[in-house]
Image (cartoon, rainbow, N blue to C red; front, top):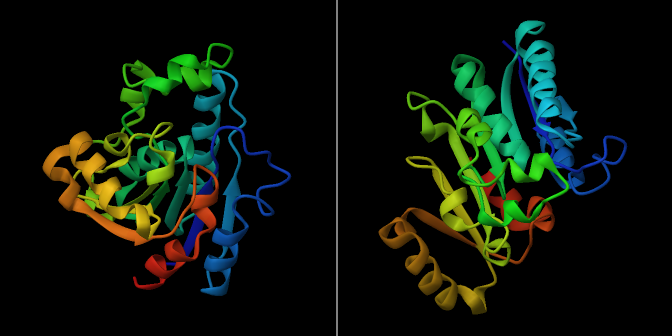
Length: 217
């Protein structure tokens, strides 16, 4: 069975520019590794469109195809990737999520004009419904998040229990970042592998340290 890569964008990535920015590095990495790469853009301005997006992806890639997938999700797209993986565990080799608030973020409540952003509040019923099922093999999940993105996507919201968690942090900031991280996540800080580099919510998906980590597997 063929293994292909499906990249699911964050909330506001335009469909016409996904291969240019910010996902060009990810596309190039997987294509150079010999994978066929598919991309789906989520243009979300309401919860109904979220449901339409995941129904479209489910039908196109899992009902009408027999391929296996590496699912790659950025930001809100990471949650959709986890949800799809939990529905089709036998068809998913791994899940790579970047700056994804799996458990929500308090800042989402500031997105007053966007139902899609408000849905990322940690109390959101929609978000609870999109989380992966308890019986999904979390060891297939690799979650990458950035010390520079902590106010938007808190570490505890990005960390996947029993998964592989990677923190991108500039090396001069590492001691301070780890102290802050321990205050936020306690002993779970020891579940995090440090990658040296800098990148915020968008730039993280193009950082060389990320590709080095992916290549190591």
